[in-house]
Image (cartoon, rainbow, N blue to C red; front, side, top):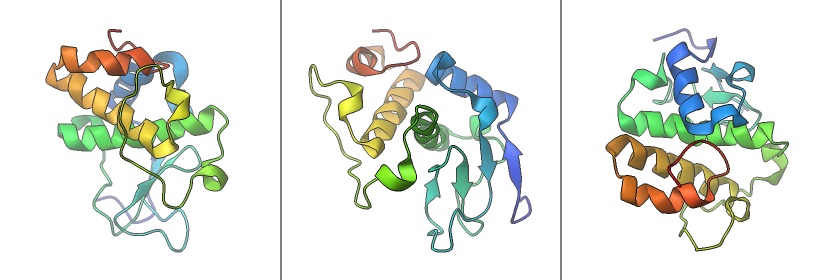
Length: 155
């Protein structure tokens, strides 16, 4: 395991994963993965990306040397956090605008644009679309592709 205060850039494989999800909509060169607390009260079980970097608590379980080399669940977790990076790169201040009790659950509603979902719902939507794509669930991916504002989702 890396030292407690390790920071690292995204690996080439992670950059390829990010490109496969976001296309040109996200600049991975601006992002790092940080193996330290974002703030004093950062819960050990929480990974967060409120400022355009991914923060993994040093006593947590979600730090990886290369998320792209991990099983699907951890890769989807990485994609979820990268959605927050994308939100920050789009100008959203997650430190101020993310509600403390943000909703993660969602229902894809016909005609509802991606921007109308909450910040955590957006992250869950993209992570779920990524899981479907990686599992080859093309039919299940269609409703996601219809609303995602980036990447090639077969819509």
